[in-house]
Amino acid sequence: MVWTLGVAALLVALPMSARDRLPDRVATHWSGSRPDGSMPLTTAALFPAVIWLLVAAVLAVALRFRPGRTRGLAGPVLAATGVLLSGAQASIVRANLDRARWQDAAPMGVEVVLIVVAAGLAGALAWLATRRPADTSAFTGITGITGTAGAQATRIGAPVLVPGAGERLVWLSQASNHWLQALSSVLGLLSVPGVVLAASGRTGSVDWRAVTLFGLGAVVALLCSSVRVRVTEAGLHIGFGPFGWPARRLAPAELVSARVEQLTAREAGGWGYRVHRGGSVVFLRRGACLVVRTRRGRDFAVSVDDAERGAALLNALIARTAGAAEH
Image (cartoon, rainbow, N blue to C red):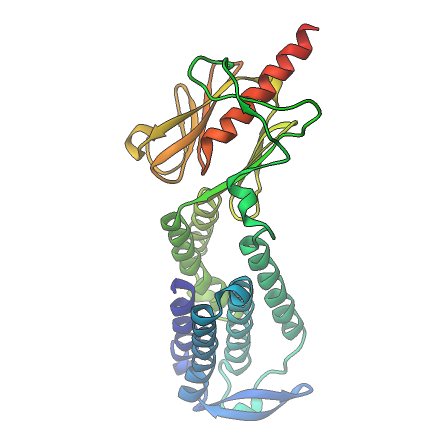
């Protein structure tokens, strides 16, 4: 919703905010390098916004009635279309800026290719960020293991799992915070107008410090808004953000124990990535957190679904590694 309304507002505001430097009719179509079609300024401002809202409405209806087939396409389509229309609108404003007639508009060149490439990249990144595994149940359970709870754990009170001989240990889970994702979207949208203004030739109107601050804030909020956690024989892997990067890795030999704790935002020190005296925490929602104690005596906690089984598998790996070291 934030992206949809933000792009619509940008498409309208971009030409209207420069109307004192644009002709009454603006060139909107080129044949080769020469403009051969035009629209009244107001129509040129509203037309792409209407197209954009129609695309968003069609996707919303499709998500309502056919969510299974549409869910994986909505994000990439909205990202690619939003970038494509915004880039096209910025190019049109740039070509018509300070021209007496639409026939005198500057020719289109390499910017067309750049816009198409940028739209393709935006769609690809959105697909990577929103893709789901074919078997989503793998993120809330254990695959390739049939062990039972053991009588002793690496640490008293910590869950442990005793796998059968030769069985591979794999556990996948994830968690996200929609408020942090919304904050990232808002900060990102606040930085977009400056970039688009620069692309439209109005560089004098851009406050690059604000654009940079909003852009960096959007990236940081996005990276702290979700995690993908994996436990394998290599240890614990925590991927940050929608792409699972950057990531933190902890081998079983680096860990003493794993456990589950119920944490609130107050106990964690706030939302997102937090550092405190005893270690660090990635807090995304109230409730169960997977907590590991490293051999350096510091704790690392992360909000995640199915934390108890993740801790049990980690304790099994820690015990196996310790046993192998003794022999």
